[in-house]
Image (tube, rainbow, N blue to C red; front, side, top):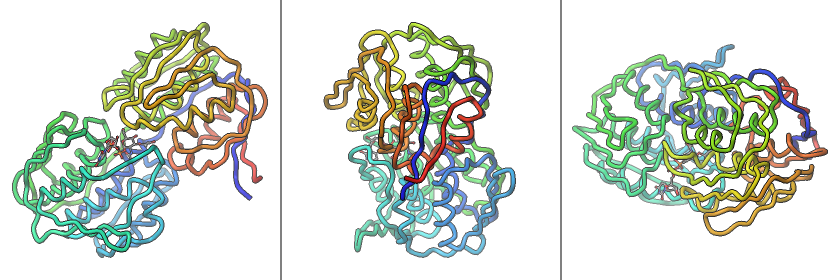
Length: 419
Ligand code: EPU
């Protein structure tokens, strides 16, 4: 037996949806919290399975985690022990690699299994390793585990060949206690990086420049507890905005920071989507006569690769031929292949997709090959005639909190079944 999501398409959506705290910030903030020597409270933690997996990892490390009724996490690392993280939970998500930087930073040693995460093609961690080595660590790989250790971490200048989100955050965490000054050149600029630097600074770290391409970290001797509210999830927000552009009569998406979504919003305006942008919410109305556009994914503030798959679904409804160029993960087109099963007219080549629309999608059986593919298929299901069955939905639950209830509230017909 396996659980699937079923969606009966064709129902117009109305109402308001509230966006949760950012998944990709949360999964870094939780490991960051163990760098403190006192309890850290994080507000607005989304109810997603990645948080459950990280909580399990914290429990292995004897870190106590309490989740209150409002969903806030109180992480208490005062009785923490540094043991090898070799349990299978580590391989369930990509973000477990943040324990490399956090444990190395705090104890000078991390032993951890290879992290898992969505299959988006090759996802090397050479830049993380290069950063740890620059700080004085040695890295070995034995029995499927990375062993990263340093007698002393000493600040250094590190230039990243690619502005990697994960490497930037991991080096930040490893460097907060390092002796002297660390400079990360060509750092990633994503809002989630600012959120991690903010929590670390609240704990007492000395980090400047987060959000620019040069981050400077002056090592400190100790970090204390703090309270921190996570930024809204720009990818969840973007997903619901795209979904509304595809299937809304009138939907309000609230608790968002529109400045984090500029690349998406500008494409939607080019397509002719009818929307009103306010300070912290966006209203999307039924859009007619959507026009094809070309889009290229890029690092922030470019068009987010994580929105590329959901956006592909919307492009099936636009008049004309749209092109997608994927520059972050060249192989991230499994969603388009699944959309073809719903009737999408698309041609794929390396790093590129061409989508011709508009087409009438029809319900079929499809597979969420990764988290954002899942989101693309949910949107496809909302548009398709008949019932769409989505399999491997654990990917969706890793990153979209309460997606069924949020959509049901908007008038969608969506339910789970064991098949
Ligand atoms: N890269 C390297 N070497 C490295 C690190 C990255 O070559 O050491 C390459 C990657 O292969 C990729 C590019 O650099 O081509 C960018 O990767 P990055 O390190 O920025 O990605 P990540 O940290 O592994 C995070 C998000 C992803 C999101 C990417 C890009 C988390 C947990 N994951 O991954 O989110 O797609 O940044 O923005 O924050 C998702 O939410 O669905 C998701 C996959």
